[in-house]
Length: 105
Image 1 (cartoon, one colour):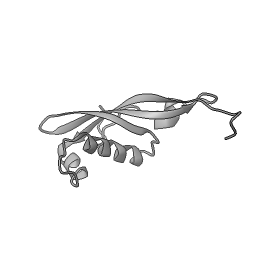
Image 2: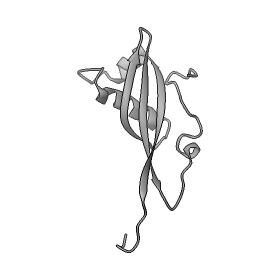
Image 3: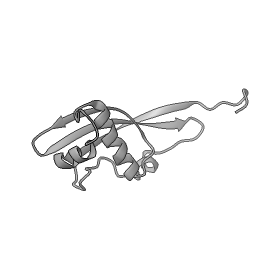
């Protein structure tokens, strides 16, 4: 881009909340030494976004769990060019929070 032209890019951050059966979670992070490391959480969210054809960039991920499920709260960033707008619906198809096993959250 020539020096005289510029577009300001900002990042919009949305939280994705995932509810994952614990067995599915362990299968997804099987290659990680520590399945409770943030990099493992980010990997799971990245896999989910790819499957959903969502172009978001995974940031910080918080985790909670019980004996049946792992709950991930992921900050997902979306680049936005200021001379054009991208709606949330175009980023995630208007689906909002999702569970990896198809259950509603």
